[in-house]
Every structure is written in C-alpha cells, then in structure tokens.
View 1 (cartoon, rainbow, N blue to C red):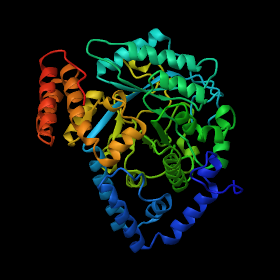
View 2: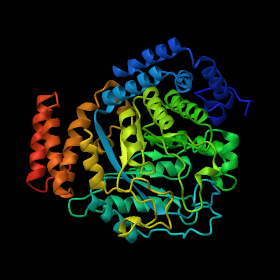
View 3: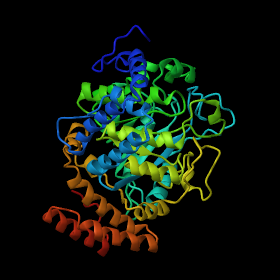
View 4: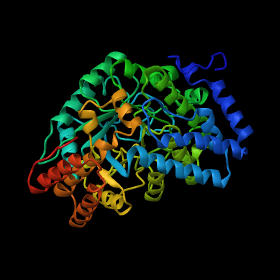
Length: 484
C-alpha cells in the first residue's frame, strides 16, 4: 500500500484513497489537535459554506477535517456542532426526507465477517422475493405512505443477477395502489460493470448506493476473505464506473466500528474529494451506519466501536466538510441518537423499516432474515409525528430526480442555495399527501398546522400562491404529485 502516490484525480483506488496519505494526515492531526488557533481558523474557513455559491465543493480538506476530529477542546467541538447545524439549515432547511429499505433477497456468495448474509451462515433462512411478493411488499409500503425506496440484495450471480434487479425495479415503478406510488427507487447492490450500471440508469435508478465498509485495505481484505467483494479495488472504484455508465447520483458510506474511526473518516472525505476532482460531482449522499447485532454477528467481535458522543461529532464534521451532500441515518440507531444526528447534519432517515426479506407483509416483525437488528421500531406515522414535534418538515419529495435535477445539475442548485426554492414547497405538498392519505387524526391535525406555518416562509409570492393552491387541491380530492 505504500508504493502508490496520492492523486485525487487518479482512477486507481490505491492512489485516490492512498494509505500513506491517510497515515500522514492522522499524524498531522495528532500533532496539531491542541492548536486551538488553527482549529478556529479551519472553522472560520468552513463558515464559507454558510454562503453557498456555484464554484465550491468541500471547502475544508480531509487533512483540515482530521485536525477538527482529533481536537478535544470542548469549545471547538461545540462550535463545530453549531456550525454543522447552521450549514444543514443553509442547504437543506428543516426538511427531513423519508425512505424505506426493501430487501429483495439474502442469497449471497461473499464471506463478509460483519454481515449475517455471508455465504457460510447456515442458520439464516435464504429467501428471494418473487415479482408477486415484491408487489405485495410495495403495496404494504405504499399503504404506510412511502414514496421512496432503497432496494437491497446480496451478491449472487445466479439468484440475484442484474436482470432480476431490473425486473424488480420495473415492478416497483408499475404499482399504483389507491393514491400510492413509489416515485424513486435507489439501489444498493454489489459493485458491477459499466454496462450493468448503464442498464440501471436506463431503468430509472435514483441513487446508486455502495458502502465501502472500510477504507483500510489490509483490514478490508481480512473482513472479506472470500467472494467477489474481496477485490478491494473493484469495489472502491465502483462509483467511477457507475458515473461512466451515466448514473450521476451516487452514495458513499462506511460501516463505523470495523476499523479506526479517524482512518475511516479521512478515507470517506478523500473519496468525496476524488469524485469532485474527476467528475465535478461529489456524493449525492453519505450514510453513517454502525456495526449492530444480527443473526450470527456480535459487534463486540470488532474492537473499533465508537461512543454516541463521538458518533455525533463525526456526523457534524461530515456536514461541515461536505456541506452539499444528503446525509442518511437508518433505523440501526435508536430514537435518541437519531434525534441528535438530525441536529448536526442528517437530512434523510428511514421510517417504519424492516430489514428482513418479505418483512412488510408480516404483521409481526420477522427476525429470521434480518440483516441487522432495528433499534428504532416506531411506525412511520409515529416517526412523522416525532419529526414535526421537533420542528422538522417530513418530506416525501422526489421532484429533483424526476425533473432531471441530478448530478452536476443538482449540485449547481444545491451549492448555490437555489435548491431551497424547490425543496421547501415540494416538502409541504408531499407532506399534505401523506396527511390526507395515511396519517392518524392526531398526526394530520399537527401536520396541517405545521404546513400553514411553513407556507408563510416561502419568499417568492408566486411560488407561495401556487403551493398553497396545490395543497388545497390535495385536500379537496385525489389530485396528487404536484411539484416544482
């Protein structure tokens, strides 16, 4: 790993995620972590993110971010968290986008040591949904109120080939049950070829999501001892192939707890910098999962766990360093952790999630095929009510994707702050749909009070009036799917 030279514009994983550069960065951070003046200067530099403009990506570098991560000065940490909160509001306002994972199959040929779907696990029942079963799952999700899904499947060339994924996407998009519709299908499947990414693009993928798990190559190889995923470079270079195949919205993530958190964060930020340097488009989303218990997985087998306080610091720092990205936290985390994370930068959360294959059609939560234990087991309606109680606007918006505001077009709107002109009214209209079609009476009443208040924050008079008229139409009948 030491024979490569760091180059963020390279297409070789060993160069754009360069091991020696990460080690040098961590050494620099340790040497300067007590330099309060330097830390404050980095934060002052990052405040440029509060004034979005078209020509920047991450204003602070991975090395500067590493210094802030290492710094333990309480005043600096609090200042960073407050800056993260302000940056999140500057780019995304008080909106929180809702989604749900849909597990299609847990057949997998890989040997990942942290995932219960690994090929050697003989205790977990293997299951793959038929297209009829997918229809039933999607109807159940629509009846909850969901409009955006992230489909998940293990890597298995025979059971889960690309044709199965494509057919499943067509099935999902085709289902219109009552007033329900899935308007965006994000895809989290194994690294694949440019040709297959091109097929996913043609099938109208939303975001292609692939977690790195760990950026430490030596540890990565140990954690993935068998299967196609053992190939570190093939996996790490997948987002570049996806973009070559026309998918311009890609999502990053690491599984915190597998390796040293500082190493992982630096690698994650370097990956974002690489995408900006090569494609002019950084990650559409960054996810922050932590290792959690599952069928035959014990998190204590991995000795890199991090406290909730440190986890919140990492979330805040990602928001400061990559201001434009959507940040995702799942039901792996409990209500308290998710509440704190929303303050420091998270802009998307799952709700009412089941991480088992076929879980949404079961009255009782199935345990035998779960990929991980769900910590936040509230219903979607309970999550919606909770968000509103904490002054967030629950949003089911998918307008940018469907209006062609993806990739560099989305980033141009986001980095300039113009995206707020679309997202705020779209959030209110999609929330009105949810309230009319799916909400409990208490949630509906609270929601329409919130909508009335938030309508007055729309600065453009024409947008305000049109949004208000569209919400009235939603409340009056079956008119749906208005968007800016």
